[in-house]
Length: 587
Picture (cartoon, rainbow, N blue to C red):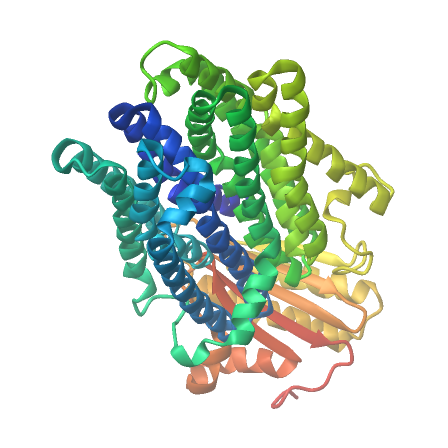
């Protein structure tokens, strides 16, 4: 089931990771082809401020993934709704303030970005900032809504939103340059409107009765907003580090070869950021799944998730890297069709950028797994090292010997240094090589159940349910547990798994159902997971009459029972005390 889940989520997350970079990529192509060199340099100078609003949105979205995935893992739908309501309110308020600030301070902001105080470069930088800032609520909203759609299992809707945004941006950019002649302001405004189009598509689900998450003004709280930002700091640090790096690189390149080097860097970085959707997509899936599995204390699921995502990262990084190496001249020609120094610099820069994609994918998977397990400080430090410190130091150092060629190597060098740093940290903390026995997870010894105290069984038929109940009972009795407890565990599996197969499985469709059994020191945990239609047995049972006698019996046996629906999966967790009590009505 995890393999299928990762495959579905990764495809959608990679597409959704294009939410910001794709519009910026399209803008940069249009600007290069129609508005020429000064305009693309202005676009590059404006980028740090554009990335800043993206950093805030990414920080908030990162907090959403941590807080709400933990809430779903604990079975707290109320807390997940509080996170949703607070995130939407915070994104709206902050982005509106950002828009107002840029509109009022557009002149000093353009000067601060290095565009000077007058002239064509200054005017183009100022105009693009104004146009783009109008779309700040849409840009931030798109970023914040992505994890909610992902957790709700709306992968197809995510893809539809990104495609809508892409088509809208291309069409509006062409109207701007061919019909309205709106210059750099029009280019920024086109991106703004395309973000709103993507949000409109996402709203089709989020405002419907089918939505897993519900917005309520009463659920908006400053406490939750603070928690979202606090938990999202590691993710936001990664984006903020990118802002710092772009600023440093612009200054470094200006001092070496002026406007031409900045233009070349802007061009290949736009393509590189789009290619990085595979790295951010891998990290996003890691954060969401690991957050849920960590709070289910499912060590085996965590290990399988990280392993599969790292393997996928190697495959995707190699494939996209090879594509960039081979297609670099053609891709750069979309921006700069004429032969010359800028084009040559950009081609080499893109090819050297491609060398860092594989380690970048692995780094993002591991960092987000650390974040999901509560290692915020460690993730923040790694994000700062990966995003700013290592690549900036490498670029500055190598440029002393290789000029701009050395600067282009900064990204790959930074990723390799970060991966090496993670390996050293894991070895020092676990005493084992990172790839052995799940050492890369850095889990505590008492996490989940002890070695040999877990059992996971998949079921497809009622005969499988009967066999699973017998295996579970034998597993319980193996450790000398009370016979009645073993009978209760078997009863829970027969009732709950049997109910799923009888009423949830549809003929002609392949379904998945599994139960994970954990033997904890003071209680037993049974986690049921299936991919049938949403059904909450915890809320259903009290008002269902005689139809729910089996479910109510199970609830009487369990000390705690909670249910969540996330990623198109039903998740039911039962906790059974080791000292059994007779359920009501049992003879």
